[in-house]
Length: 136
Image 1 (cartoon, helix red, strand yellow):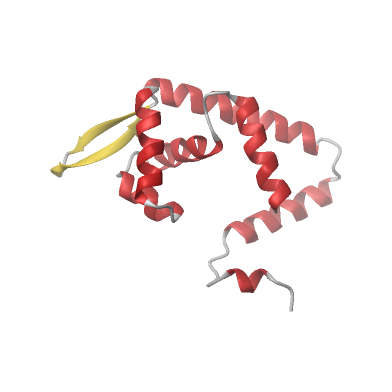
Image 2: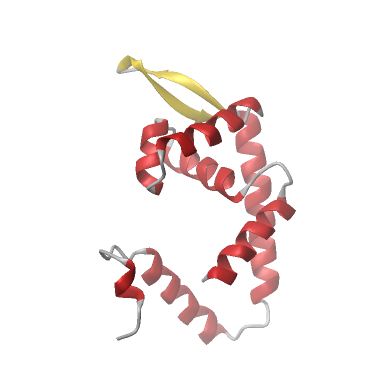
């Protein structure tokens, strides 16, 4: 898993030099959710609010996201992708898909199906702790 995470971070830098894996992930969540508060991002990813705040500030400086007042409560600021944010996210997503297709091109269909099943299972896991990941 460590090698997988390192490879993901390294590939993110190659896809777009100004967009870290964390930034890419946050942009993706904002696109999927249609916008959300910074506190929602922190809760969703189990990150400290200060960590998210720094990432959000960097994304705002590069004009990839913007704050808008929530229509139902003007005291709340909701983060949204800008057009530039949507464009860069689409570019990086396509680059990542192309790289993944190339990496898996020689895999037999049965292996791809099994791999996809395992990824869905892994991503859907909501266990209570890391101990559950250790073999018994």
